[in-house]
Image 1 (tube, one colour):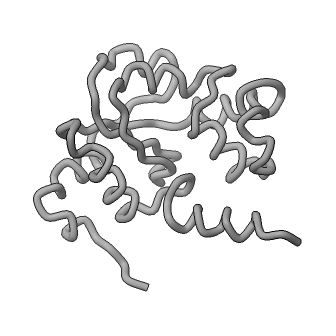
Image 2 (cartoon, rainbow, N blue to C red):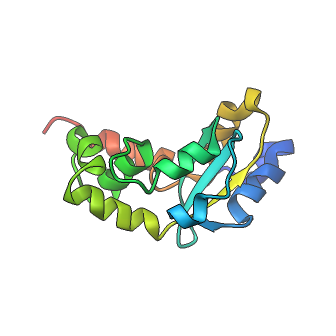
Image 3 (cartoon, rainbow, N blue to C red):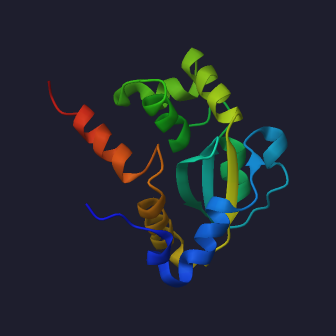
Length: 154
């Protein structure tokens, strides 16, 4: 299996390094208030490990939804599946309401994030390349392969 590195990104290596090694902020309501309504790439970290990479048209809206219970967002669902062992079929519902949602909120509140600005026209392609390089714990290729294997009929 081929291992990718940031040098494989060519001219996109600089935004990748900004995203992965740049300034980080707390993923709490107090840590996200200063982010504006701009498009960009978002990386979520648990300690020093990248757990999630995404692109968004509105960084402020996305970041404000992540730590909030009741929000139906992919990161909360993936945290419930990967870290808490919640079955994929019920993960979205359980990650947004109830005791599992509270546990997910505690997980997310200890995480940090960083952002990088890229042209909106290229955002999704760049996000996919960054995911291939970083292999995040929640939405990386290894995690997706593990989830596919877990969903095989018994």
